[in-house]
Amino acid sequence: MIISIINHKGGVGKSCIATNLAHALAARGKKILVIDCDPQCNTSSIFSPAGDIAEPKSLYDLYAHGTSIAKCIYKTSYENIDTVINSPQIAHLEVDLYQDVKKSYQLLRKNMRKYANEHYDVTIIDNNPSLGLYTINSLIASDCAIIPIEAGCRYSLDGFVAALDAISSIASRVNPELRFLKAVINKADGRTSISRASVDHIQRRFASKVFATVIHTDTKIKEAVAQKMTVLRHSPSCTASHKFRSLANEVLGLL
Ligand SMILES: Nc1ncnc2c1ncn2[C@@H]1O[C@H](COP(=O)(O)OP(=O)(O)OP(=O)(O)O)[C@@H](O)[C@H]1O
Ligand SMILES: [Mg+2]
Image (cartoon, rainbow, N blue to C red; front, side):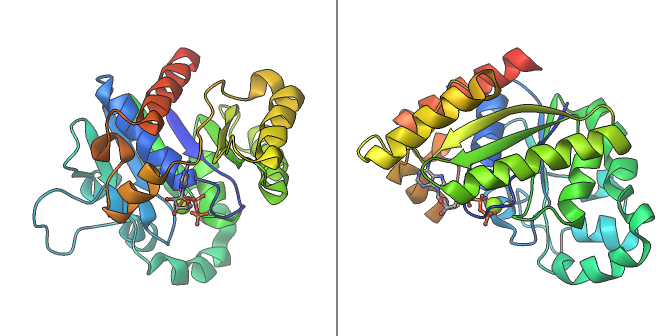
């Protein structure tokens, strides 16, 4: 099962959810592959290859040189989690890839899909804040998508609607296996009325399309990111860690 985390609005919590959901699923005994498709490489800094590996292969090698996915996969320091890291270089490759869009759009699917589904229970793809070539590649290679929405952020809701459109367009044209799993509300803040009203609005309007688990704004998450680790490793018993475990349970119930 390959899950893309998408929303072209920046900073809504895609990487936070990709990494912590991966950790929570791995803790349930699932074998997880995490692929960082964002040139910012935020997820790569949390799930870096374990050990001292000189010049590890990355997603850049897959896109630029056709390196097989198997050669780009490394173990991490997290049990049950392997990774394909990214390299900032990949940002410059996008212009070249647009020269042959038809071929480019299939690169990840052709190289990754079969291998990932044969070797892992769940593959999680973190994406950049764009619906450009790399995100489209991810959706063409995925079985489903989770869309984070930032509570109280109008643009994030617009990003959610645009992501839904992208999913249905790709599902109808290229990848019939692709489905929208659910949205997850992130950065809720019970102390502000705008955030409470926003959570209420999203839950009413999108009802069963939204995970029941709501992730609140939590400084433990920021502390964990500062220390380049998941919040489940940094503070296993904090509220945010419990929330990610509960999100993982919901996800498993839908797969
Ligand atoms: N629930 C939360 N509580 C506190 N901080 C959070 C929470 N979720 C995310 N953050 C912080 O907000 C920032 C943006 O989160 P994150 O990087 O996960 O978003 P993103 O959607 O991946 O961003 P981008 O679009 O740039 O890839 C980070 O500093 C992250 O640590
Ligand atoms: Mg990110």
